[in-house]
Structure formats: C-alpha cells, structure tokens
Length: 154
Image (cartoon, rainbow, N blue to C red; front, side, top):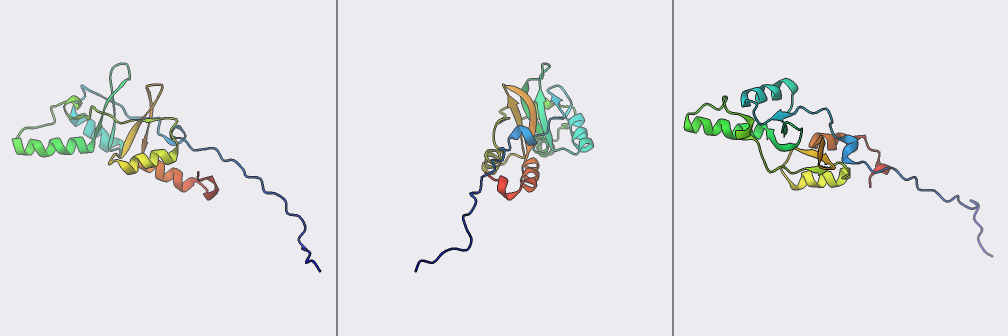
C-alpha cells in the first residue's frame, strides 16, 4: 500500500526580486566643498563646525582636484612642531591629497563595502560621468546595511 500525503500540492513560492542598493542610493549629496586657496585654519574650523572629518577639494568649475582630511592636517601639525613653523597661514593646496580614489555612483553597496575594507579610507568622493555627485563614507555603508532586511542581501 502506498503512503499518501495529507498535505496536498504545495504552491510554488515566487522569489521577490529586491532592487540592488547602489552607492548613489545612500551617498551624501549635500557636501561641504573646499577650494585649493582656502586657509587650513578655515578648513579646520569647518571640520569642527560641520562635524566632519574631511571633504572634496574642487576647482572654480567644481571639478574634483583633491581631498582634505583631518589626517592631512595632523601630519602637517606634527611636522610644524618639529620645524617650529606655523601652519595656519598655509592653504589647502599644501595639505590636500591630490591622488584621489573615487567610486562610481553605479557601484553596489557590497562592492563599496569591499573597497572600504581593502583600504584605510574613511570616505570616497562619488563620480557620475566624471562629475562629482556626492560622497560616501564607512558610516553610510553601515547605516544602509542595518536598514536592509535579510532577504535584501545580494
């Protein structure tokens, strides 16, 4: 005698496709921008006032030419003590990092997390069609991950 199931036929579950979270979905777009001729004193005050630790440096057309961070300032503050030279009269151009790593706006959250993991960077400027459109930080990635439900991970 064959054993029959009392459950009947099961309905096939349809997988619901969740959209992939991209850098442009979670990046900061309201940026504090700096220029090459701003004094480092002004920049450090801006860091404190805006509770940020760095930002993009742009030319007069808004093109990304570097980044300035607290870490850039710390090196110079340390060196100024050694050489007994004040730094506060110098400009961003003396301190900024000129070789800037960027991320594309179309990169996935997970690829961006991997990029952060592989580098010591705390933030990346975000480009779309070679234009600065935002900035993404480690914190942005963490917040987005917390806000995702487990079925969204892909």
